[in-house]
Length: 143
Image (cartoon, rainbow, N blue to C red; front, side, top):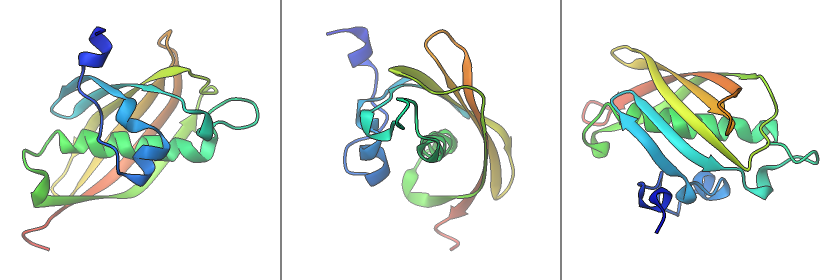
């Protein structure tokens, strides 16, 4: 078994957006409080006719990585909801795959909103996409 397969997976099957992006096949390279790094591939169903990541699916990747980044701040997933309230995506270069690194980093944590950056890198480490996401954390016990 290769070391890549020993890394934890990003998510289990059964999430509609995750299954579309084949996220159960992604691997967590690094995870710390407010920081994640994911090894992901580019499935054929999200490619445009030029064999690049279709821009409309970029936000799905961004949202999933930003949400995962925020989850690193909380010990129990049952105590809160996270909702995306704003997302800005800068497309720097086409995402061609077949593999890419997705990095999520907490930029600022407020009482109820947080700002997270998500960066897509190609296999050579070149930045392809840079996004900023504002997320609202809702405590279920107070909702």
